[in-house]
Image (cartoon, one colour):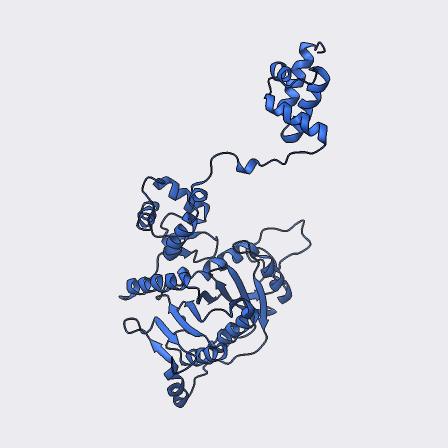
Length: 401
């Protein structure tokens, strides 16, 4: 063994502390070979390193093969990793009680239940109270983007007598769809129109940016109406941009376009459950929309199940959370061309998936209404819930159903 100056030995130890991974092991191996007769025990004694580390470094130095690091597997695992289905169970509870930000300023989801109540619901699902604490449930909810506090801006303006019954029906039907292999649940809605032009859209000063927004409002070059469809099982979002009014015909055409795009993926399902917000264009009392949904059911051969949210509670619809994420993504960007709007929308993401973007160039008229004869004809395909006839509607492709 070579005699080493104490100052040099101190420098070796300092260098070892600054290195990590295989570089540290190779350096230790070279010192062991050059100064400690290739003895890992002597390296452990003089350098203060682990003997196994020195042995592994010598093997790597001799063979030329480097061991791959796996740092992310070290340490204590998160609770949701220990219990395989815990994350999905918490999401199921929170999604039923969650509401998107009404102003789309964030993609967080506001809840009206606490972590303690969530823990009690998990216990009803079979989890033991000793498995995790209330604080743990709170941390998991935070990691999944749920905001555990009530805020004034998310409080609905009004509440009708049927609101609680409607939400109970929504939970029951959504759960039934999510657990059935024959039913696909989708969430659909139209976002606020996008004005195409050199508008600032809440952006900051762009002194170093070649793009600049005009400092006065003016007529937009175009106005786009985005219609979104969220497939809740996979998180896949499809956006259909329209250039006309948000009419029942536009929404029906957009649904048909979505089905054409996704037909190969969803053809195995026998029923489509659609979560809607009961707006004027898609309400169950809108005769033109029902007429088009009957045609949609016949065209696809699938049962259409319309489940509506109560008035002033549309932000509970799952697609609203994607709208919040999209608004956060493109807020401040200058959307001066329709193609640019499409391109930016395609680059956004939801649950690690990019949206599918398409457009409809057709012009739609308002005030379209079917005749009484047409209403009577397609009425045979519609079946309403006895307790909630306005909020739960089945549409069958055949009268025999």
